Image (tube, rainbow over all chains, first blue to last red; front, side):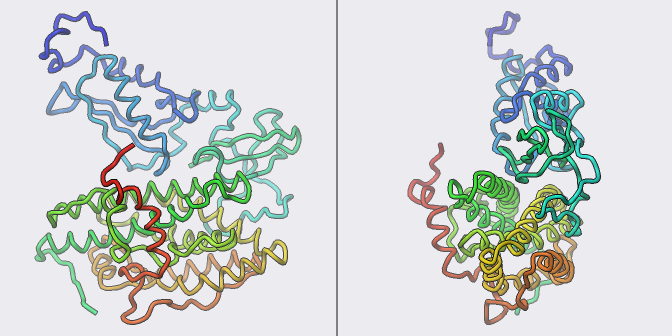
Length: 193
Length: 272
């Protein structure tokens, strides 16, 4: 880190509250890409729930983060990227709090995040349409009392509704794999969670 | 059997010891099942299934970490030990594990793995939903996060029961055989012992028996579509109604732990 500030060279500088507004901090965080889906920032993903100065120690920044899935392996990498990014803009004292409640939901994905996902070829959450037809022999939706209503996920390439679920998980826990029966292309669906 | 009653006049150390034991029960089942699912890495029948099994395993491992981390904090309040999640996972012997017998059963063939998963998932999602009403806020929030994931797991494993049961003669026979072999381990999921009862009375846990009817209804609906049938629920373990949740395990758990714990036992506290 390079700093030209008057206190940059002595140790007392770290005890000073950095001359940073929360807006600048949010902006810096918006530059951190999700390690597994790099077109979406951690802000667009909705996992940063709060950024504030500690009430007791005003030089301490508190960032509250909520994990997406319990076992998401990107979580620890995101935490270290967050530390590095904030240190680089002058945040020397940082506490990252993990908030489990309320549990993360894809409803927190921003419209910009959804747009970026679609441009990348991943159908964003909430795109599934009610209805669907049991054209596939193994389509058993509606049996389990916990099962969601039958849905159709339109193809992100050709828009066809003739798509088929291939597997409930994809390369990450947050996605499912589909195949379009019209254009025959496979695609990922970022599941509503 | 010893009876526990938790009440306000009881020293906190006693209630914490009981809570610690309960948190091990909550965390050990997802931990051991995650390890079992991890054994499929690189061996799944198709690549999509390889990915799906290990994604389910990751969810379960994440949940186990949250339960065991909390267990370690509670232990620190009532004993000089206060082990963290890693110490609890890697430095306990089989008799100190509190997982359900069902989840330690070997992977077998794919029908065995998916049947074990379905029988567990259909219970797990309801257990977590019940725990979202816990008066312990930490228990409630871990359960709420896990319940969202478990509801997806049970959809998937239910799909596979139907696909395998109502599939070929071969897949049907293997899946029915899996049910016949695993059915005996399901009774344990609905038995409450003194610890469960004490935690239920305190509003922290729940009465396991109440999950039996909705679990059975769910399982039967899926199995009927799958042209399969669950054998009558029995309890594998014997005297005193003790099973995996009381630390009485079958022969398989020790072998599983030998693989899971090897590195930390050979090189304690090593990191990479």
